Length: 271
Image (cartoon, rainbow, N blue to C red; front, side, top):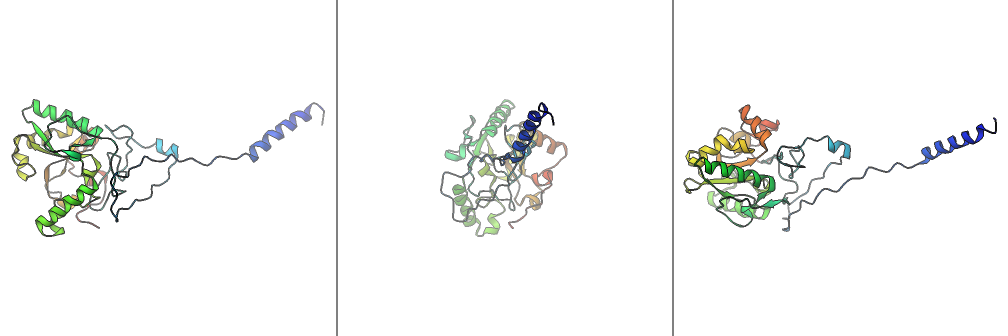
């Protein structure tokens, strides 16, 4: 071997050796934002493990229309695509959104019930404004409910109807309520007529929202004829924000439940 080639070869061997003995750093996982409620969780509250996911895989997730940063995930309570029903509890059970605010609309409630997630509040303001312009003014009856509030709400209906079986048709158990996601709201007619009653569907506000809510990304979550799928009696006043894309597609396909739209099992009763 010539003296000229020896240094070149030595340098090449040194570089190869450095690559062979170098350490590849393990994938780093970015901690997810805390979703624990400020209130102390109940003794039966559980937190399900979050599957690990590489940064590259996360980037491939689609984003929902109307909610920047929310992933297309039907179990993540922070996603506007989350599906909550009698077989799909929130995880953790005491989940508490971190972007709640009060929308600038007519509100017939106070405290936490006057709050919605930011994207939902924006859509609510636009929807209420359009309804008022069309002569069908509405009022927000109820929005977000914490786990602790849902405990009281559910127990009230159990006492009112005498059994859990009867209460289960009209009220969600704690940790199973869409209201806890901050994505749902109950609305009423500005006159107060038929609020939280089936006849709300026949009021100006009820009729308007049935025909126009989709334009703002909302669906009527519990529709007539879907009791064996959703597990609840019809509630023409209960709106769920899913974004304009999903709401529009559901309307076009004449689909009346998120379970059917996303291909998820019916949830007529608790597991």
